[in-house]
Amino acid sequence: MKKIFLATLALIIGASSFAFGREARLVRYLHYHDGRIVFSYLGDIWTANENGQNVQRLTVNRARDVYGRFSPDGRWIAFSSERNGNLDVFIIPSEGGAAKQLTFHSSDDTVLGWRPDSRAVLFSANRGEDFTPQLYLVSVEGGMPTKAGTDMGVQAAYSPDGRRLAYNPKSQVYWRKYYRGATQSDVVVMDVAAKRFTQLTDFDGHDSWPMWGHDGAIYFVSDRQGNGLTNIWRIPDSGGKADRVTTFKSGDVRWPAVSADGRVIVFEHDFGIWKLDLNSRKTTPITLNIAAETQENLSEVQTFNSQADDYDLAPSSRRVAFSIHGEIFTAPVEEGDLKQVTDGHARDRLVAYAPDGKSLSFVSDRSGREELYVTSTDGWEKRGRSQISTR
Image (cartoon, rainbow, N blue to C red):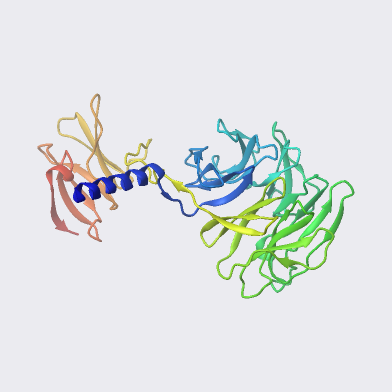
């Protein structure tokens, strides 16, 4: 009975592990809305409840989908994707559906957030002739993006009422005053209507990722405590002394994002993901157990046109042998099946049929230098191979 009980317990544990998956690592680029988070994992966009349950995969694409951001009304998720060779802005319904592309430029468009009315996505891009990063808005209906009103900008966020915009003017390579004499990237606030700019911080280091809280303060990531360690800090929107909010003793805080209501910040820390409640200033780790296939298909389909390195016609004239991208194939002249003869990391070339048509010779560097091999026309994996001579 004891053995039966232990065996049953093992089966239950195994079934639970299969059902609930394993803890996901390297989850990135979070955002929070009304008890839900959106994040990037395995290059796709996912959502989950803040307690780690109800995990859903919204995109399944070979491209990299990153920087997901809920719209303030919760209906949409904006994200950046390199589906067309570089990062463009896309939106997708927050419950899942077809993704819609909003930008079509050759530069990388990095989603930062939304305008508070949920009608436009805020993003940064290097579209100018001098490749200076600037802030743009693009409508959810599409159309040409418009500048957000700043001369330059990397990270940015609107105040909840949309009247002001907090941003970092310069990119990370300028975040040190001693770097080629440039000034550091401080937190600047723009009055949208008046086009009036106020510099809030002046620190010789990192003051990055500004975010508006519901308390009227601006939260940001800084290493001002020393030793290069970053934490989340807070400063009144009118300026003044900054005070530290999180108290991590090791590991960096990176890629924070605040909810549209300004009450919750989610962020990456030390290869994990965390939630910060701005009312209590309590930080809580978020654990996601995801059961997902993490490798590509074992079979791969590729199409080649006019890319054969060399070829040889069989004595019967019914098949032809050729090498493409370092592998040997045979194909029918008229009807029949394509056969792959070799498959490996080596470069196989200079293929030739034996006079009886039953074997193939080819040159390969699989031993570290080029040598001559002979294999059957069905492939050396099935029939074996012979090394004939050394060149």
